[in-house]
Length: 473
Image 1: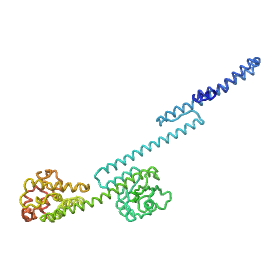
Image 2 (image 1 turned 180 degrees about the vertical axis):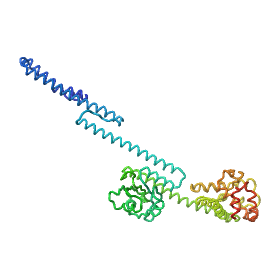
Image 3 (image 1 turned 90 degrees about the vertical axis):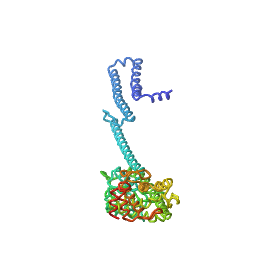
């Protein structure tokens, strides 16, 4: 029975338990005392001192109840406010008029919720930063940009996200680390940066394959190496780039802006990104090896095409030399000239798919045979398509038989739709074809060829390119 009664009390509120406690400790004993005196010694109750004592006892019990009730009500109010906070209203603060342990408890609780709010804000900011980093890098990965451009974007985004002054991705070559891409570092300085494996903090990370978060205030003598090279001055975090247990290099950010050191979360983010960066670099290397082998195969095919047709032997190299001269005359940049040169060398590679009886025929081609011959431009593009880095070359190969008037093949592009590089290739290709022997005709003289170029300027060929070409041949 007593067990059941105690369990019932445990389920009641604090204020209800307080009332029960006052009844048990004061009111009931007092009433019992008055009852006993009334029944056994009624004359005692008539005495003034006894009545006064009873009055004092009643007053004391009432005062004790009032004081206890005030404390309990403060506790109940704190409980209700705490419940509101646990339901998500973290901005709410516990308030009490007490100046005792309850007030101290409220202050502790407010301090905890304040820290919790800060942690939530930091978590949201970290999430935002991480999402921004992954979004920008994901977009770059999905684009056709080269790996160097993607890695440059990676280190720029990461450096800004971590609030650092600079950052660098370094690759290991013959036991020495060299900067591949960087952000916030003077380009003239980065070319001279060379870190021996094991030297300085970055070199130590490469040697030990362990991440480091170091500040200069830690009196770490390894830091002197980074300071001398101008990479870092007050703080640095560095993580090794490892792929399949093989060290590729390091990724690091330097000098936290507005703070003396990087947080542990910064190092975790850098570590997570390092794993993806190592994979990207290694995949790029693998793709380059595959592309190199493919280009070598294509080059062999191009030679095979010329070997099939004695009349076109040396044609690609001559066209290549002419497009370079023309491109320089138009002040095109080195990368564009390189693309144009490759396109000139490979523009007829699609002829590998044309039957010899058509390719080497000395008589005029039939309509069907002409249609088959014209397919070589599309075949050439399809051969180059698997290599993403040759996309611009493939475009030029596909369209090298287009005409200024829009009556060329395979897509009938007109002059306004063609880039300058394509117009240059068309003129140089036509010139060499006219000045070379063919199965169906003898080579034209240089003077005759100039007249032909001028005759069809604005029809087959771009006038400005024709005029410039005539000036340099």
